[in-house]
Length: 320
Image (cartoon, rainbow, N blue to C red; front, top):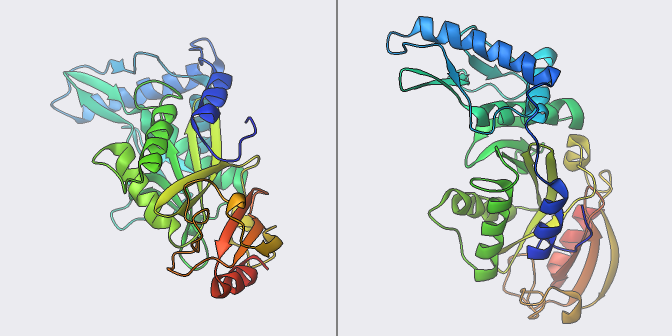
């Protein structure tokens, strides 16, 4: 990722261009293997339903991509995802749900069968959280609230929100989601009656309790951000590395978090237009800021808070 203090239009331009256009790779071993499995599940899905006449499987117009096929196959082989003969699946590396947490990779489309591609991507990415980033079963939820997955700390607070998309750019893409969030933040809006707007509103709410790591996933794209709020606006800071579950959920001082410096409040140290730049305390109170405090977050990103005396003491306790 290119270096920017906060996500803005220029950051999105630079980094979405770096992702480029992901080519369809029909000849790749992973795509062929997953396609074979899907065809078999579609046969059984058709046989089990009287309203489906043809087992012919319809995928999206762009086809399967190697990255998403590889991620989903690894999830199956690791036991993090279990799929039945008819294409119904469970994500086993997350908390159990009261209804059993059964989803379907396939659905009826006309007289045939269609692939629910987002489930392939979502399930594979959730398994990556467990396998590659150390998230424990009891700390993960799949398909919770407005997001595809949540990760929790020991106190039950949401520390991680994951959203997976079929595309990096274009319709219903990571790029479109980020640009909508940026627009809502710049407008000081609380959300909007859209998919992106509802996610924005929920993320604002979650950030009231503290910083949340946002993980956005698409083919050949894994972006992590540290999300914070200031004056009812959402700010995303790119993370160079994805924090592990242990780093995010450990106690003060154990996660790499630290207070780096403390100075008398200086509006110039805070992002223009924020509460801190106007002299208010960043931590959701009506007091005037007395201090500007620089901290290191989990994942080695840095933040600057404008704090009153009581919240300075709280930050020094939390960050160790």
